[in-house]
Length: 378
Image (tube, helix red, strand yellow):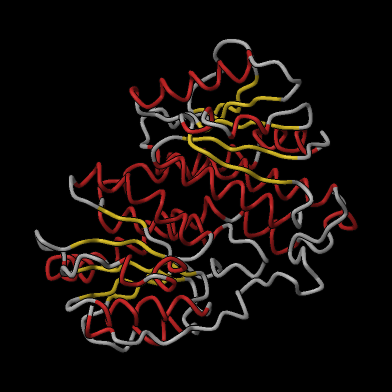
């Protein structure tokens, strides 16, 4: 691709492309910090603690992928609650006044809700401790919590504080960091995920390029379990990088039949992220077969960890057959990021800043944080 074509996309291209490398760096960084992490978890992850994963937008979707995965791995409850929901309704988000570990994800930690959510948790709850996973050591979230005794702040590897408008490497490295904090055994599969990522950016890159040449009005992403959160993130990437000119939608594989399926037409691409779990996988394959048999002229693509199966197109990611879904999300998301980037370029936009007018910003602006009155009377 020529320099003229990619002008205004330099950051986005670099940040998508660096991910396999920074996944390996993330594994090594978490391993090097293992003693401090384990001491923190031993103090604060007690039998009665509630663990909440939070963030806004893409950072919230990190939690939506990690929460069900970590619940399954650890056998304990993890809740994903967006900072936007905490700020708007803190008493609802923290209705149970129980010891809470609040895990905050933030690329910059500068959005108004980031610090507000941690402060509101402290107002509403009698006992709350904080684990911060961020990409920016100059952000408000880092500066607030890095100096506080008892809080743990982890910073992702250098270069993951994405300079582009859309979160790409910041998203995947924060997700991997969270998984490794609570499931250190997953360090053994990072090389496989990274190798799959290299394939996705190399031999596998032709598929998103070819789909970008088709003039879709909308793309629907579907997934189950942790991959439902990935579907949300994938839809958002398309909306962001095409400045809303191509609509990205998402749903669960089972939920799509309950009304949202009506969105399909001959200018729609439906992408199904197929689970590695044998039971869950059945539902993804069911909706995949149904979509392929449904008339209407829409295109259907399976993103799978196995070779193509049956009729229809499959973006088959090699070498990841035994990975859990939350780790599969790392190479899987590269399809969605690459498709969004290619569609943005096809439309003549500048992916590094699809909104030069400033209508939508890299770091959210304009949010007024209202004081929480009468917190003591909850």
